Length: 108
Image 1 (cartoon, helix red, strand yellow):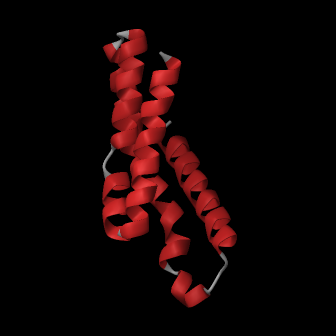
Image 2 (tube, rainbow, N blue to C red; image 1 turned 45 degrees about the vertical axis):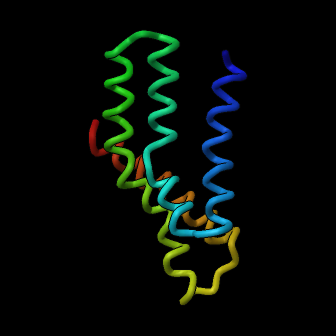
């Protein structure tokens, strides 16, 4: 079953990448859909049949989406900054993780 989960999950990501090669907008549209969250919730429920756990997972995703959007800020401002890809990526990761940890701290 693990192999099936991996194949389906990878297929979704690869489809988004291939679509992005043709049209960045439609690739972003596919990724912006909560497909990975849906797949993860489906696999979690499939494995545990525990709605309490699935609900907690969904709630945490809901609250973590806004700070995760901080990842994209360096890329949005790249036309002005002219930073290389990996610097944008690293700064985005730091911003997103910082935002998520700050949110966790504030919610406790």
